[in-house]
Amino acid sequence: MDSACFINEKQIFELLEANNKPDHHQIEDILAKAEAKRGLSLEETAILLSIQGEDQLNKLYQTAKKIKDEIYGNRVVIFAPLYVTNECANVCEYCGFRADNTDLHRRTLTKDELQLETQILTATGHKRLLLVYGEHPKFTPQWIAESIEAVYETGDNKNKIRRINVNTAPMDVSGFKIIKEAAIGTYQCFQETYHRSTYEKVHLKGMKKDYLYRLYTHHRANQAGIDDTGLGVLFGLYDWKFEILALLQHSFDLEKEFGVGPHTISFPRIEPALNAPLSECPPSLVTDNDLKKIIAVVRLAIPYSGIILTTREQAEFRKEVLELGVSQISAGSRTYPGAYKDEKENKRDMQQFTIGDTRSLDDTIKDIIQQGFLPSFCTSCYRKGRTGHTFMEYAKPGDIHKFCQPNAVFTLLEYLLDYASPETKELGLKRIQSETSNCGIFNHIISDMYNRALAGERDLML
Ligand code: SAM
Ligand code: SF4
Image 1 (tube, rainbow, N blue to C red):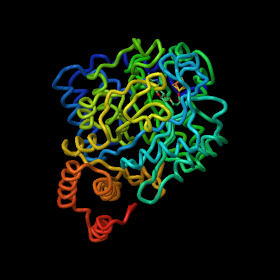
Image 2: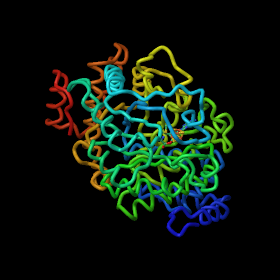
Image 3: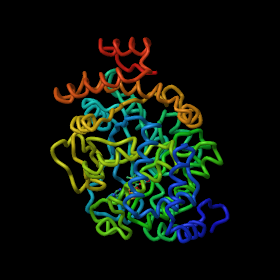
Image 4: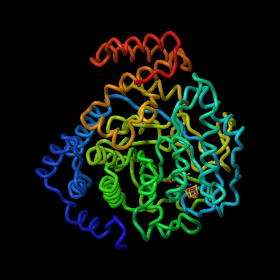
């Protein structure tokens, strides 16, 4: 192991080996401890990852659901990805954007095209975007910051993106300072695999080959003042149990160094991609049942980090895991630059990978409501300065509900009044009614704001 590296592979393998047949008392004790929402140690997590029997799995799922309900209530945050460019200088064996894929039609959106994509998304009701970029030296931090600004300045008070998260190549500290100035929400970067020799095998060319530079990306972002960062693993490359313990080591190190762990965690599984050999037959398959277990265990181990599940996954599966701890989902997504303008057509020779959940935003919202959840387009926390450490100070004692629940209601109400189909609107208004009548935090200030939103005022938030 590199002396500077916080990933301790030897420790992970030993923990997995020593805890692969946990007894049922150990499991019960850990599940009981997890209910205190203080997270789990590496060893405890290794034990839960080895749960096999149906009874114990059900107990794990019940505990995850309880924790999810206590921390996030029934809210589900909604966003859409917007691909700015599919040009890339790297060769990642699993990705359709890899530099040596000569069949891929390359495109980088101009400012006008980017603003058109933004307008199309805001016209459907989106308020939060994830901007996605290939990695190329010509996409400097300044260039990325300008693209972020172009999106923020599109539209009016009603049809506007209010929070932009970014998924872009790692930068140095000065680069991160530049994109922080452009008012990004969360900075996301996935390690793909924490297993170093696998990492080196699947990243063949380009800047991304450097395992350690990528591993310390979130440290540099924090040093630059970006305190909402997102971690992720691309499942399919290496053993998922190893990846989860390594992700925990990453989270613990961020917590140790900066006092705050990841704001979000993403769990993409490799999807089919054009001319990407590893996407045809990923070497370490993660089944639906594995992913359910992963989501439940991570909900217990790192309770205050949002868990993101994208439209890579099928609609039915996404519905199931909402119960276990997923707190943010993308909806109505497309995965290439200019894709929203194409609308009916999907250009396979431009996209990064194939999408599993092709429902529209409106259908997704309707389904979420029918499932008993409360879709939220809220962007308040980072705009009100509740990020990083400050966010955790509200989240840990449960105070965040006082903001999130009303903000979810205000933003859903806006969606229903301005964008929803009649059926979704009717269902949504009923859900809002039951939320407001059952919830003690709707005092007169909030009722007043609610009435102002009903009367047409927009972007109200606590
Ligand atoms: N180029 C930047 C990078 O690699 O970090 C950011 C954008 S990249 C398009 C975002 C993420 O897509 C990657 O981190 C990877 O986890 C994921 N990805 C790549 N190929 C994929 C595939 N075939 N299926 C699912 N996800 C994939
Ligand atoms: Fe490029 Fe990112 Fe795709 Fe790798 S995963 S080929 S860096 S876009």
